[in-house]
Length: 253
Image (cartoon, rainbow, N blue to C red; front, side, top):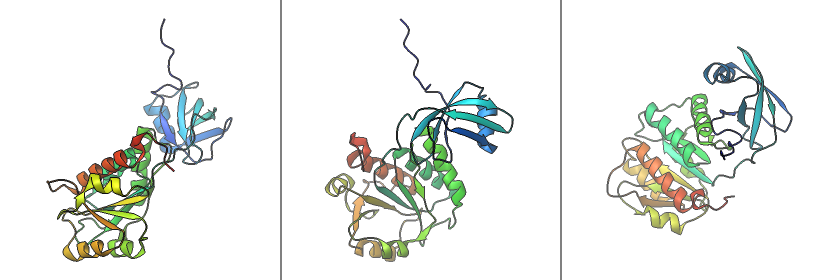
């Protein structure tokens, strides 16, 4: 006896749209999203699309009409509520565009709640197109089936971050000159946290001293090798998610 096909189909396109969504609501998409559904995915009336609104969760929607410029859909019953991602912020110094794009994409896939780009003395890039960055994380969230978009905020200087950082929120500092093993540090300090990653050239001595002087800072080591900025951000985030985040199979608030 053949297996019952999954519903909604696993191959159904996924899109984030403006909300809030609700059962029976009509949604009209235009622009790039309409082009994607009608021209790229060849969506036709009756096809199913998965919609998320970053507010209420994940919903199936059936294509009503698919024109050249607009696609209209009818929303069905909610599949699942908006997920509660771990309270984890990635504070990453800006890198060259392709490398920081990778950080944005993989941080989203790994489950980061907030991404805070940083300006430090040795950054090569000192600007970030926020609209483009948010497009990258949205597309990554669609691809990995997230129902909650990570918050991406405007770049800020390291000294401003340290000045305003609360003493009771762990700020793990990936220090290439050494620190506690990341595994033991993450295990010993569970709860809301952030990870501080430097630029291509690393932090200078004055920055390193300022970070270490902060009461919330916890210097960690990511192993015996010096990692590139994007590698350190991705590897350390994955490790935190496995030890203290939602990779443990427990619900996170």
